[in-house]
Length: 304
Image 1 (spheres, rainbow, N blue to C red):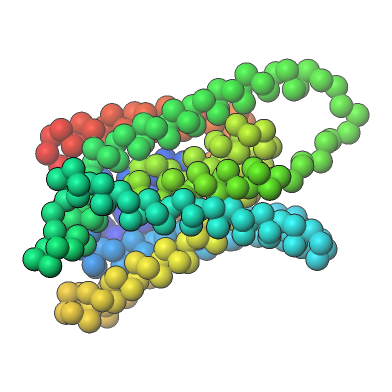
Image 2 (image 1 turned 180 degrees about the vertical axis):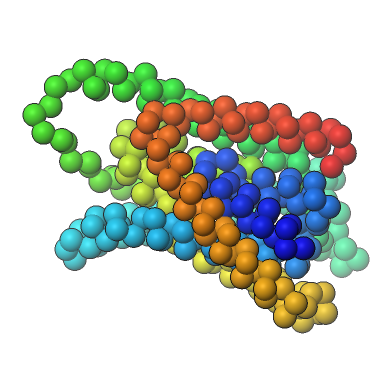
């Protein structure tokens, strides 16, 4: 079991913080390893892996955030306000989708109901983990990353040709840009495979936000939204524990090991992402997502 934990932790740590969708990778790897990703015990492990990568984000960006967010109370208010508005837009877009999509699937006959006419929780979870839907989501975000990366790559030589007497300070995001990025993050919530970081950073770049600002803002949003997501999954696991579905005490060691490994893998992924983003190689993540989409769709066709 420890080997499985380490494998999933490395996959989660790398894929969570690279724009390639951690949920898609973890679900596919878990299925290939013969593990049920919807099992409460596996869910608890994945929750702890998410916690490890969240701490990796905080550790990696802390110096930059402390410098940019806390120079004065006025600056903090302005930047925190944009993060709050973006998070609100995420909830306004994402929360209804989490309700509407299962009901749409029900009306199309994709999902069934229980004896009381309610949507079966297991079937809703399986819908969001469906490999066909995941493959399409990977393809969509791959195209978005590719467009943003190639556009930025074409613009780079022209920008470098303009002589500048001194470095130009990076501008802050506008309220409108924060709202759009938050709304795009909301679109990512229901779809496994629709990379949150890939979509939000690419959207920011297409809006004209500097790459460093786009990266910092995207991961600040991740730190805000991760705790409620983790809490939601923990409640689900505790529910299963209360019903005798999972013994939490037996999983403590695996969860701690997974957290540590995902934290270290997350730090490595962030260094990789920053290097490619600043080096004009962002589009390569888009190519990877398109290849991954083809693989996932192939696995779906093969019956996984």
